[in-house]
Length: 236
Image (cartoon, rainbow, N blue to C red):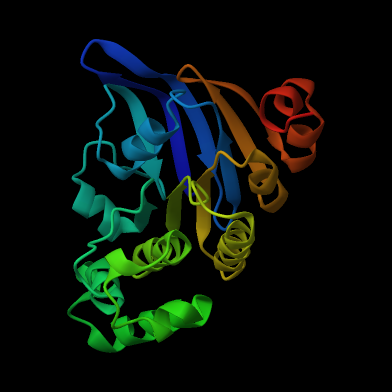
């Protein structure tokens, strides 16, 4: 078991955002998390990555509890998050943004170079634009850079928060193809995505979150056939 959450409760002040979350992700899986806006999806990712501390329950990664650890320690353990909205450094170049993603490995420049080459192979446009300021790129190119920057930390588990948000359909297809390739290369992925149909198509399993609670879980076929999932998320 790579990631194991048990009865996780997370609060914002007195308001409870996550209620008794229990879920598991195996190594090399691609698991999606579906839910409406405000259901707690981003809060769940932030709880895993240490940006928010749960009030109760446990988060285990590779058999070790991480819910009390600092965010940078969690990153060093092998979890990298690509946040909603990308959060790039717009005044820095593509190359510098990628370098910052590799900060925890900065003492191994040879490995950083290899990782950067791998990102350029995944997203050739970033190689072409490596000297360009990130803030002048298109939305799709910025999303590729955000994913590439997260990959520079060499994660065992990649958390992706709404990677298709605001992008044109053609670009979305390219982003999802890249996500599938990252997973096929051995990186485990936990994908939060509002484009439920595309998320389910590349995921092996999924969870549905409503009002901070997991209300359904199943494999790809079960998600595609469940009437509630079809009506609420697949437009059927």
